[in-house]
Length: 326
Image (cartoon, rainbow, N blue to C red; front, side, top):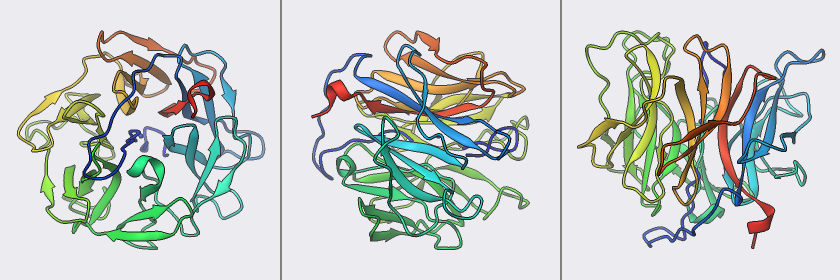
């Protein structure tokens, strides 16, 4: 996760029963979930130190659950399990996938290959994961099992593909795609794309407004997409008209609209598994202070859960609380 203004990186929790079958979403309350999020916390021994914190949905009981001098970023939680990437026990920014529980315990390394700084997703209710290996490893998305074994390689046909997210039924994958390998290359354009779960049927869903020239070169014109669990749209962040906001697009690409209308910049976000809650990071336009917010999707009421103890608090994900574990 690169902090702004250089670049930042956010995954919806996609919980499905099995591919091709209708999934069921349980009713929940704000006591059913915790929120895990990433914090930039440099210390005397490591300027590049990131920790993962957890809190309840009232913003209380904040706790550092990694407490290690490394890069640790979470981009996915499956029930009570937190998936995170880290460069612990290896070279700086050489990141691999790990898992832990909501207390930061029972840490286990999952992959033996490096990953990109990218969101990931889970079909099959966490039995499998789709991840983005480092460009030194491959240009495909990898579908892996819980032991990190590669089950399938999914090539998109684009020069740059990242932040994959499964549809609620597991049949489709949406992702952020670019026509060049890097944003630093002249002519780079990025949009939200969709493919079938086997990699076929590539389709561009979004189109950045031609007349909007407000976005800096490094900004997301189409940020990491999230599939709403119960409504038929894909959400994503985009820098338009001088600020970041959340936008939405239908899976067929025929409808595209602005999703939120908040004065703060909004980028990384996650939907609760029942679709009733949206957690997101918000910041001032100068991007000097990032906070975690929670929105009731029905009422659109939003509450800031963090304070200015840390300047960079980003990429929140929902974690099932212990009281709701099976």
